[in-house]
Length: 366
Ligand SMILES: *Cc1c(COP(=O)(O)O)cnc(C)c1O
Image 1 (cartoon, rainbow, N blue to C red):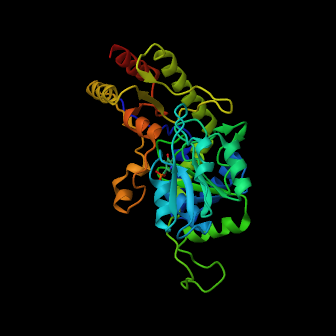
Image 2: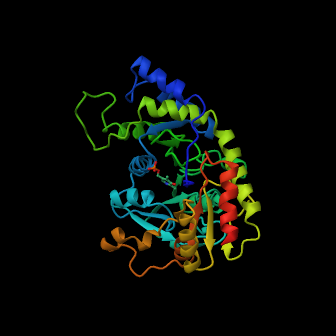
């Protein structure tokens, strides 16, 4: 079986992890956490990095730290993983959805302004599959309407928009270090911001909202235990040392697929670049012209022991949100089409060139 993802753990991961065991620092106290936070923040160009247990936790903390609450509207793409929408709904705020751009699969930035109301507090962008959102129009809208910007850069370590690092645009930005991301810590996430008070609040919320100065075990608000362990940070730090190598490898994988599949009929392949960025191919994604073609292709690949994953499923079509009465009678045709017709190929960092050739030859045979 060629799996959709295999991580690459061939740097200092074992060495640093061994240090955790040998020194006994295995909890969320320990030197690797601070080091990982500082080095990641420096890489992205932010003042603060706050490590947490996963990327979804990072979104929970970010949304709460910005004091978004009941009735506030947050504009976001319908086509994404559920994590950002879940964090918004969990504080009683309302996700206001926007359709996708058919060529990049990111939020269609031309449709955002029409969704702004007197209740809108923030725009949440999600960079999807390897190309960043077109940030300039979004930044202008945030300025014009005085809105907060939340940036989900979970898939975008090391990607840039017009030369500026993704994860450096939001009032608050987040990363995930799940094993299929460009760098992993097993499970893990990080919140990034420049504001000192906001960073302090995030540190508090990840740690059961313990007061930093008051008597321990007296709480004035609710948070979570979303702390990252020193062991996760040890792996994350070793991975961060190789981020540029990982990105180069992902781009190589993307290029090999692009070349091998250029004569394939009936599928939209990822854009190698836009005016503002070069694809980093978080995954090698493709959209079939019809749902039937997508289903047949996925089935045939699976029979050939080649793993695939379907695209995200739109937020307005999620049974859990429909049960809550959200997004009634809403329809977003571009997102609905890519959700049904899209899937991605094996694109993990551990993939060999031989495996890529095998995937290509199987697809071309089909
Ligand atoms: C992976 C991912 C997340 C969630 O990260 P976890 O660490 O898996 O919780 C959030 N947003 C996007 C866009 C992602 O790809």
